[in-house]
Length: 264
Image (cartoon, rainbow, N blue to C red; front, side, top):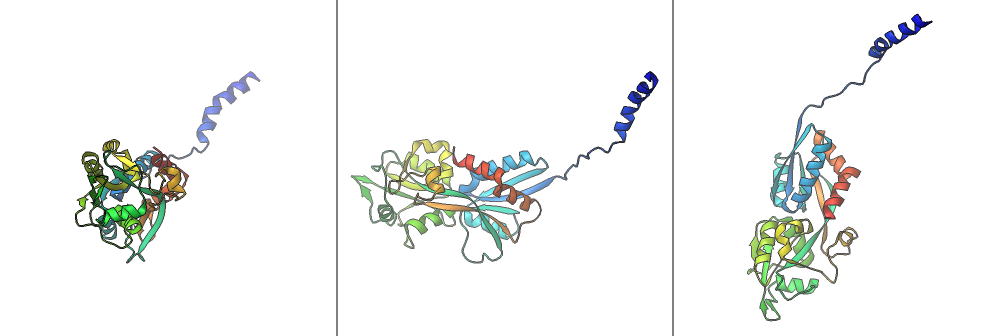
């Protein structure tokens, strides 16, 4: 019996070696080319970093433009997938588009500007140039360049087809807008709420609109007046890694990243 037990123990490693072992599949390295609108950049960076961590074979490269240029780069084949804040209403039949996050447009002002909140009617009058001072302070209207998705959304909601005043100061990025408003008494501008994390944003005041502040809750339930959807877009149905990334962003892991980024 003892010899039999010894023989059994000796054979155990041999039997274990004969049992099929799970194969470790090594994925081929993949580069995912993303293009993002300026206001989506912080969210795109957070999503790309989290995706690379859970998909180590993927390198996500991202380029940032205004919304119009980002869409153009996508259409011309310069990116696999775009994160956009505004999409041209014309010629969208070839685009696959899915909303992936809600965003607010914050109205910001220099701390010296004599507002504690503002209504949409007064905001329209200021941006049309009909109200140029308030309580003795000359107002400096700050806008974004043509092609900015934030500008398109702001003007659609506030100006409703009317032109912004010709005396407005035009900025080419969210960062430049925040920095200008923070340093210029009497100035009033607008940026994505995602851009309020910029260090310079500590130097501006965020104005409630119609008494409602742009919080995560008021943006999600759309009680905040200046709310919009951010969009994932590809030319045609997404395939390959772009499809996997889109599914991940729209799934629980990606939406968790969206929620954490919006709730900073």
